[in-house]
Length: 226
Image 1 (tube, helix red, strand yellow):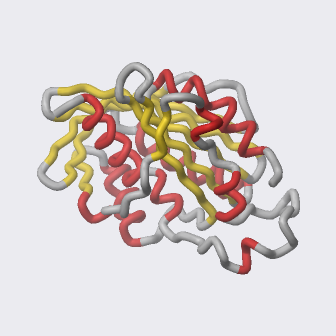
Image 2: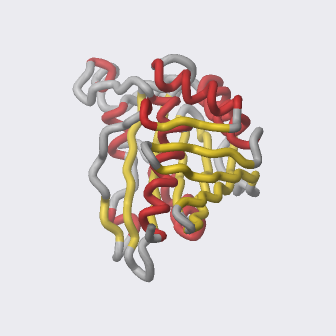
């Protein structure tokens, strides 16, 4: 298994196990919520998925060497957690559409081929500050509660370890962790950092260097009214 394949699987497993639980229901881009109150939402009200999509990073924001990946269908029922009760419970909640649920969300993933095949993914969520804080806190607490565990995806078994990472002093609240994935004799390290700024939650995941390089601009664009 090549490193890029391991990284792809790592990001996929991470998304399915954690952040897709925060957004198990998608708000259609053309729903009435996207149009209430005109093009500029109130300061206290959640942004619509359509508005969040406009605040995602794109290739021009990231620079040369980045290619956006097409969205793929989620396969929650294809992923199983072994050896981490807190994550097993979280995965079950996500699979049944209950538990964490931020309906307003947007996501973009990119491959970077500047020096080697690496990936970075951004997700935006919007809800009340209290719901965002509680929801993402639950995800990180669950993942950090188990220093090591396994994830199975189809016939592939991935050994995982999780450790807390120092989060940058940005926004209103911050969370960060490093996840090490081992599959097919290959290791892949993924960094995941989440920043809450008001009623928006910004999460950037992927190769640690890429996360650190693009977190500031992701937060800046997420704050920009469109």
